[in-house]
Image (cartoon, rainbow, N blue to C red):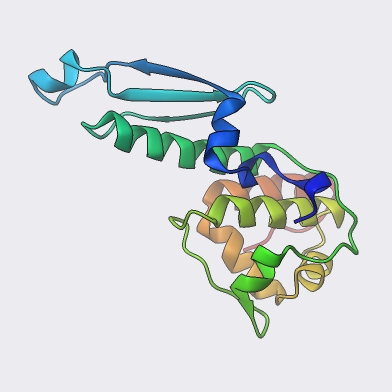
Length: 171
């Protein structure tokens, strides 16, 4: 992706964390003695945007940190739009995930937040027109909708914007 348009969710982890505050704490709720004695909960806040990612379900602070970083990247993808031109080519990463109009990615893959951000940025540039966005991204409209459904919050967000623009809801 063009450096000018580098979305925060696409930043390498160490560079992203340099822009964040990290808070450690104790987990709440059931889980035995270990849970309340060790600060394994992690909350990471991206300072420029205020977007957070947090995790506390694991007993390991490092596992929670990895989960919190991933959730932060997904939340950045959902909440931060990077300006782009409708006619701008898809990123190399996006193109590497597409074959014959189909995109192949799991919502747990480390590239998922970056691809989600790109799809949402393109949709924003296309005024939420799913066909134009799909054409720009070199996938079918049904594949783009299927991709958005992987992250229910993304689909809800797109439908909210489409409703404001007087467009029908995507299913």
